[in-house]
Length: 407
Image (cartoon, rainbow, N blue to C red; front, side, top):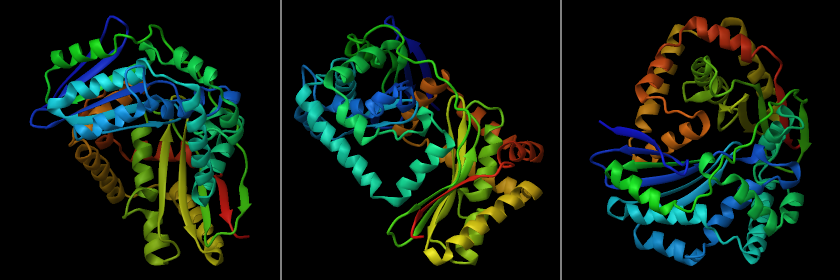
């Protein structure tokens, strides 16, 4: 039995606190509703750059103070950047909850953003970009995004490009922070055994310096898509991404698409895994996935194989897509997919970190938190008619194919 409350503080900051009796940790996260798609092209990578910089220190704490504090109290702290939000989170034993909340409040409202730290972290990010460029599967995914969202911020790399990272200045980073890291664009999410009122008092104090206002940016949906891409590279395997446009996160048929995705390539019993890996042994792994944004989405199939099998693997993937469009899925596949989606979802909420992340992510992206039971019911309500509709909407167009590897 859990107890979830949503509160808006006087400063405009939205807070979600979920009391989870019997747990021994408190997970705290701050979700900022600005991500890579919200940047000007000249500032591509600014959100990711800022994510790195906030842990470099504040007026009260150095970077060493932050890391030593977390280690001293047996916790963990991290952050990540996505296309539509940036998240910072910390988990500590319940008796040290105030330390984690105070630390996150400090770095999210009063970071130093020193020019020397900007220059140091610039080199770290350039190395991160270079590391991804050395990974052919990452290259394939990025080229797929570029073609799926042609001339749109969703098609850019979240980390930016070497050119933009090289030229972003400390003044630009600070201006980006002051414009977007405001009370109206932040959600603080906490989950653990602590009392709601105690947590609110800690948050109110620790985030007292948050700037007022709404730092979110109006978004424009992408329009056209691109074409197939083949990139020659001296690798042992050919890396493949095949996919197209999907649904946005609030589409009423989103759950039906989840079901279809699981049947196609979402698990060990999926059609792609059974046909290409188990029956024919042409790949080590093959899977499909979905990405859902505020106004659009995508589906994709990813795999890799030796060059002599590449054509056969592409043909097998295309055959499975044609079969899906022509014949839909069976009742047994529907039942398995609904069971997997609901079960995995419920099992994934067994710790404070996952509950914190769920609440923060939903409030940040949708402005509300759907009860767990309601989400389970939505998956269980998917029927063959809904599956047929979503297949026709999403999988009828020819997909984009991206290959990276030997000719």
